[in-house]
Image 1 (cartoon, rainbow, N blue to C red):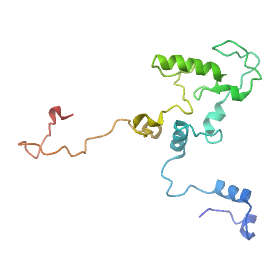
Image 2 (tube, rainbow, N blue to C red):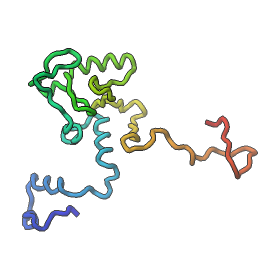
Image 3 (cartoon, rainbow, N blue to C red):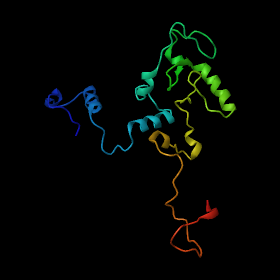
Image 4 (cartoon, rainbow, N blue to C red):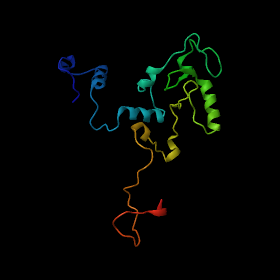
Length: 177
C-alpha cells in the first residue's frame, strides 16, 4: 500500500521512529480516496490563508531575492539584504517589494474596489488570505483552479410543469431565467 521498496531497512524493524514514519509517508503515493488534485488543494490553502511555504512549491521557486541595485518600486528604498519576512513576492514574476508598502497600496486599491496587481508585471496579485471565506455563505469557488467555468450549468435542472406547452421538441423557457 505504501510502496516501501524491498531494499529499505524499515522492513526488518519492529518499530519505526516518527522521523522514519514521516519519510515513509512522504514517499507514499496519494490515497485513492484523495479526490482533489495537489494544485487544487494548494489553491484552497492559499484562499483560506493556511498556505505554508513548503506547500506552495511553485511560489517559492519563483522568488527572486533583491540584489544590490534593487529598490522597492513604491518607496524607492533599497531592498538588498532585507529580511525576507518583511518582503512579499509576486507569484507571476517572482519580484519582491516591501510588505508594508504593498499593504498600503492594497488599502488604496480596496477603496477603489480594484484588485491588487503586481507593480512589475501587472498580473493579478494573489494574496495568501485573499478570499473572504464568509463572503458567499462560507463557500469558496475553486472552479478556476480546477480549470472549470465559474458559472453554474443549469441546463439539466427541472423547471417545473410547462403549463399547456407540448412535452416534446424545442423548449422555450422565455422569461423564466
